[in-house]
Length: 164
Figure 1 (cartoon, rainbow, N blue to C red):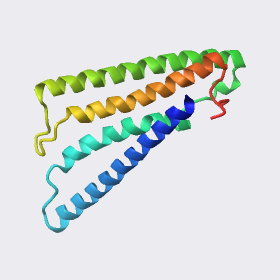
Figure 2 (cartoon, one colour; figure 1 turned 180 degrees about the vertical axis):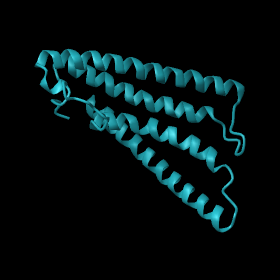
Figure 3 (cartoon, rainbow, N blue to C red; figure 1 turned 90 degrees about the vertical axis):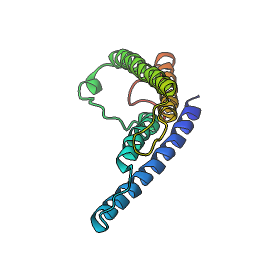
Figure 4 (cartoon, rainbow, N blue to C red; figure 1 turned 120 degrees about the vertical axis):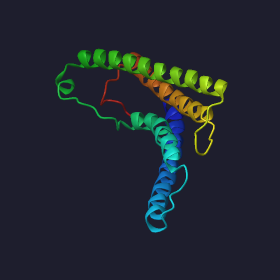
């Protein structure tokens, strides 16, 4: 199961990388057109507001799978194994709860935007599908956390000892 979630999250990260490239090209083009021709790209700010959070939602699970999130483990490394195991389990339960809450609120907010038919002011981009995609990406994050929590509980793995 861990391999499946890692593969899904890996492909989501590629989507995030494509969005980063789009954002880079958009920003460079906007700055160039603004200063050379005094004609910025209409809606570039709106597109940036949409792309950046979507990039984060798509890449967060892979960052977690890869162990790329910031960890302060000065005290943790000196703990005995049982304390590390309990700390890992409690930490993952709290973390899972927060990510589930965030995902649920994204689904709720996406649905409320769908009901009122909300869109951006300049480019009139419909917003609810974008939030729905972010919520779906968060489901991959939740799956990774559940798989990792299962490994902590069943296999007694702790942070830093996973075989990856």
